[in-house]
Image (cartoon, helix red, strand yellow):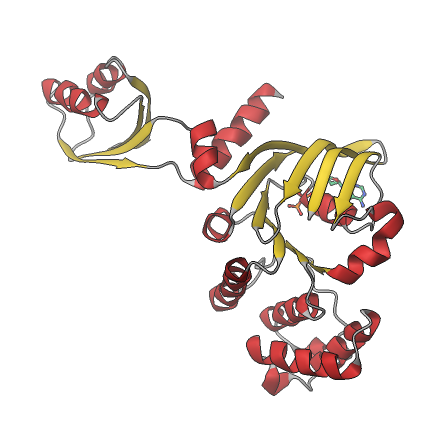
Amino acid sequence: MLTFQHVTHHYNGHAALQDFELSTAAGEVLGLLGPNGAGKTTSVRLANGLINPSSGTIRTLGLDPIAQGDQIRAQTGVLTETPALYERLTARQNLAFFGQLMGMSAEDCRQRSQELLGYFDLTERADDRAGTYSKGMKQRLALARALLHRPRLLFLDEPTSGLDPEAAAQVHELIATLRDTQDQTVLLCTHNLFEAQRLCDRLAIMNRGRLLAVGTLDELRREVMPGLWAELRFYQPPEAAALHAVRAVSGVLQVEELDAQTWRLQAQEEAVLPQVVTALTAQAAQLTALRPNQASLEDIYFKLQSAHTEGA
Ligand SMILES: Nc1ncnc2c1ncn2[C@@H]1O[C@H](COP(=O)(O)OP(=O)(O)OP(=O)(O)O)[C@@H](O)[C@H]1O
């Protein structure tokens, strides 16, 4: 569907992507995550032939974006952070205009617009100018536009940025539907880790133009945060000696203090946990709960980003 091989892109001598590698599988929702300036939007622009890479190879739907950008854009849908709509046209006119550009027949475009306006709850306002819409309504209309010509590959760049919780939930529901039907492949660029963990089949994490890791959440857990994790709660903040004692238990890999009464511990295996409890009891620490839990995407993301920053 989409592959980047050793892609580097410079803007005025500044590298926005460096030796970037990525590939998507048909039907998946792939999340592209990274801090501001990581290169997410640049990847979307390159994949659609809006800019050319300085070096490396990109294939979008098997086509070369440098030479076949028009063909690519006819089969992809792109939603950017700022919806590119004609404010003076109504929702229906915006869709009709875009459908015409995409070479849809007037009837097909009319039917599909009707369906999408209904889905996005815009039917009642379909004949009002887009300029009179709220931000959430504009984003929903922009999504309808991106989906109008039934693209096989959809690029969603921060699709819920600035939306209220209701509008964001609606967009999430749509992406979940796309994921479940598997007719469309989606590249979802987002800062929202909760959104990514919930919606994406695989996650690609990047920083300063480089790919740091890619995989399913379980694959990333195994690669980035292996072992068993557990959260410990105390009735009273334990003494410093208790922390030393737990760190000294064989098989304890690390202990972080989340707050005065909560620790997070990484152990080699579950059998280490009873020894942790014994060590705490010997120190008279008042343990109220010990819950094994899995690393979240947030844990993995920050671990990767801080390791990259430290190594830079
Ligand atoms: N048109 C441009 N001209 C010059 N530099 C640019 C241009 N567009 C992006 N850049 C730079 O390229 C780098 C990558 O930017 P890009 O917009 O791809 O990142 P991003 O991950 O999408 O960021 P954000 O999350 O803030 O949208 C940044 O350092 C940015 O300043």
